[in-house]
Image (cartoon, rainbow, N blue to C red; front, side, top):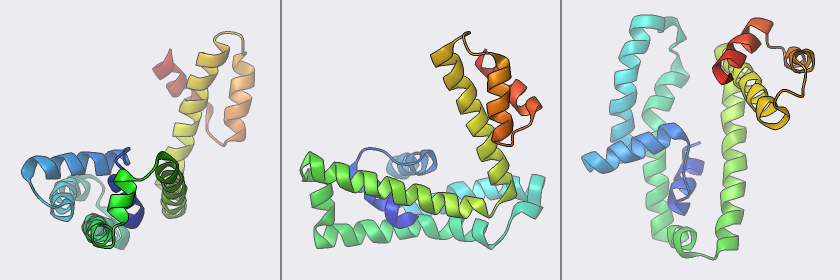
Length: 171
């Protein structure tokens, strides 16, 4: 995952929200990303230990410590082999191709990691139901019946109460 984020950083078109936040904190503090992620995720870890310590595993700690340093190492390598120059100054078509390929691979890795976590699957289903609800309301407005929307949500395996709470958020 860190390899893909490092490529997204070098292209300069944006990253995932957590990396974006950590990159800006690192820039403000004039730190490397690895050190910043250890600090930020260390603070988050304190709250996780207090409220849901059973959720902490090897993956939590590895993600907290390794991803930022992997990004730092990859960016160092990209600069030394000229790949960073290609990504920042290359033609639009090269940058777009690398960006799309990297984004697809990043999402695949993220989803593979997410499949292992029950809470992550539930969150993803809830987000899908919210996205479907918002899209339905934006595109069909009041033309689509709630029966159709609920049937689609139930096909995704999301409860009617989750649908209702999402619907309230978008009303």
